[in-house]
Length: 187
Image (cartoon, rainbow, N blue to C red; front, side, top):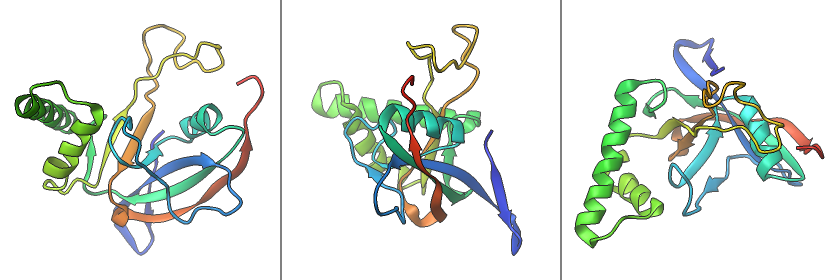
């Protein structure tokens, strides 16, 4: 479940509670690590889960053998919600289509994921003052059967929602939440 909190000093301002998973390190992080991979599905940025459950799944799948989960609080403004808002979703799709068409016209070929995200970052998101995007990554049941997102295929009713943050200026707080989580052998 997505969680929001407010400060006692300003109950009108909401903060989105997010989770950042990383491999365990001797020195704890003071800020999230930026993903710069060319296959980053929402582009270059700081990735967070909106639910703790999926932060653990990511840790056990991708950050073996020991991982940590950090908790962050993001100011709830200038975030494009392409998961729960139809307006946000259609804006997201419209600009991705625009980026693809621009690259095809300019270079005469289909674009790579990295090219689409570079175009969006340079030409679209910055101009719209979008600091981050909320989107779900369409889960599927694991082959091992350990993770079941739905008993009824293909009704995957639990969205694995991520947020990519392009700019840390709306990150209010970042702290260790669960330290040194060990991956279980059967996962």
